[in-house]
Length: 296
Image (cartoon, rainbow, N blue to C red):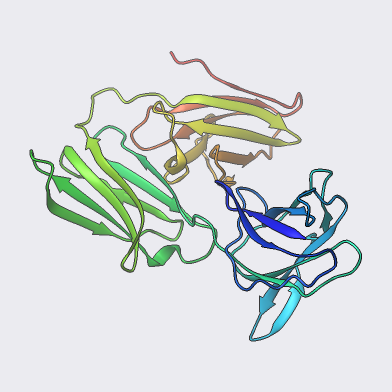
């Protein structure tokens, strides 16, 4: 069998094996844009192998392996397979058509960061770095102020809060390079970010998609510039009639989804984010509806 692993950009040939032979090619980086890992199985002639059985075991301790939950799958007609899940670390992949050979050791690594920078009015910079593991506090974020020649002349260091957010409430307008590092390695860099002075009239939150879902209100937030990962940080939700502050649960994803649990059949809520004009949402859970109140 020939196992081709997806790295998210291009397929890489691992090794050609005869049908039923042991799969043992040593450590190899095998990742996928979605799912735990994916690949393509072919026979010695290059034809895809359908209905081959695949599953993954995760390494625990020195030499203990446990099957990943829901990791069993079979290859499709084109020989491709995708094992659902998420994570990084030491795994081994077992594949067979007529009987399991030796497992294929794999090391799964992924891009471990997703950087979003939002610069609302008042020259305030908010940044967020999200990761798949629990090592966010060990990441440092640095702003480098640039002079007229584009050279770095001043640095601003910070570490994130427990949710992974960085916040500079006061910073001089100008051009900056933004660098995220873990120890000495650079994880992400954005060059020439412009920080502008604040405006008198804050922009209104835009691109808000709202729907009622079984007693919940799902709100998808986007800032006018199309970003918005940092909106959840510092976002406050209030009951308009009583002024009572609500404590929503958050679900962070690529669309910056905010889930609000509604405990009354009908209410109007207000969303407030630093640097933006507040918006209001009418929620009618009897009809399972929610809509954005038009601006005055």
